[in-house]
Image (cartoon, rainbow, N blue to C red; front, side):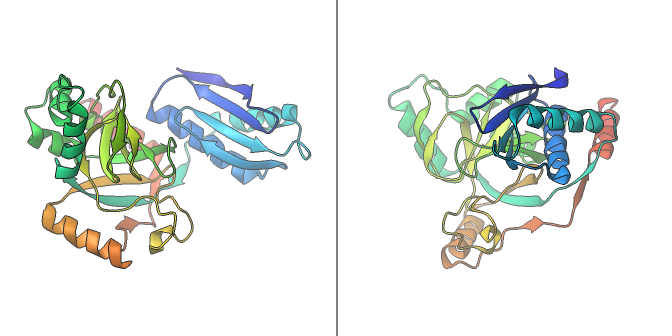
Length: 286
């Protein structure tokens, strides 16, 4: 459910956790981002940083400039004004992410895990079984058939939690148990109802079924897309996965290596929450 009033919890002497609900949904996540935007626009004295998540917002503040009780009071007031108003349009960049589905690198990772867990169903087949799909071709078609909403960043620098914007493309899957000790950089995974792109070689638990040669995190900020941030995505961005074959993979990989790769993104778009909700209502009647 989405709470009628925020739930505030202390996160030490410099942080406030603002919980807005206990579900994982687009509506709740948009409310988190709308509240973050309202706080930024209000330029509250003493607020240092905001970290929006799926259902909550972490607020960092300077206790020498604003007291904990005043942080709660100001944010609570902004929330009331926000929910009584209209849906706001949001700046939203659109990224086209090239993906080689069912690639050899994630297959190697899956095979390595199954050496000690032979009963583990290979990830693509598990996804097909869990979602009633006919096979890998349909899995690729469904997964690449929608834009994804960047709901949050976390777990690892640059790692994104992606929600499908078209409910007809919703996929779900359990996570690994126990998790893997390694995952290829750029792997595409799915756990619960979320898709992610692994920004580096890390442990992980999402089911794997593809990999992108396009970097989404760059500590050295070599490429132009990272000039302002080590992480490519921002909450409120959108992602579209574009299937590619090995020839395109090699081309992108070479461009990344020589520093000339230009991330395919559209920066001038605005996302209308009200129009999106109207579209969802229309397709629900089909």
